[in-house]
Image (cartoon, rainbow, N blue to C red; front, side, top):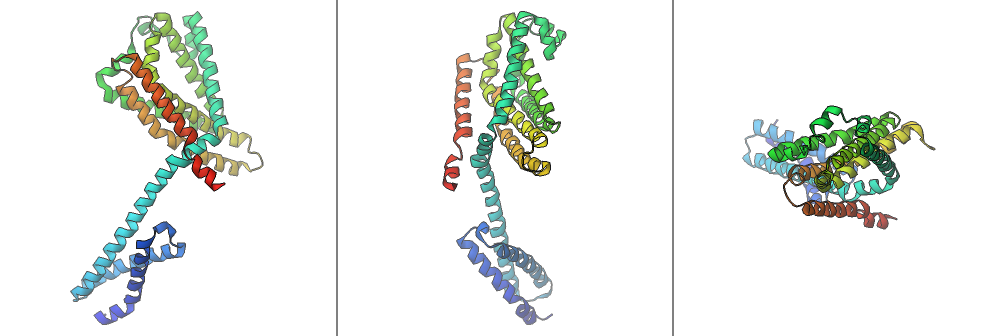
Length: 324
């Protein structure tokens, strides 16, 4: 194919690509009409192919340079816009979608919290009266003998390898969170078990350490990271109950539609909790076991609690009110 014929057959498409790119210079990719976005992608791919043909067959360096600059310009504009939009979606999720979903589903989170507390308090009181009661909460006699009976402050070992300890803690916390969520598929019963078991275990361990005379030290250790960590566990429990509730009580919707809608909320809750648990793991690996004043650890707990619940309860409210 001659160079002139090649240019005559393709130049209208190249001009259209230039027009679309000029339009993109004045607005974001998202504001283009759907058909224009499809056309942009189609012409961009075709122009890239034309560039390859021109390089292989044409002896006109001006044509090759023109197509090369056009393809580079289109590539940068398209993929830069997509990257910006992905960033905007992430920002929108954490500043609006996640906290709004938390507030919309607060009843399920409250149920998970209440169950955790009921079993936690019952286990604490039972173990306080009789150490063997802790076995009902999953605390083995061997663990009790090696730790609380021997007055071993096991959490202090995290000082020896903070980075490794923090990573292990983050992994364990995320695993508990996903279990609380995933077991919701068992009609919510699995989630109820996870919340009850974890509440009972923590209550029993706290009671054993208080019986041994150093419970306040364990509370100081737990304080710094505990607000974020336990909140995420409760949210994950609420997410699991959302799934179970969709299966048991779909309401006016079909079970499939109910599961789809509530499942979307559940996934948003879990995804939103992951960076929070990473932060809790960092605090638990570096601040909680550090040999510093308990007052500092409680101050961290208060600061993180205020920041977390200010975010969960207030973020995204202005946008929600404007949309009404």
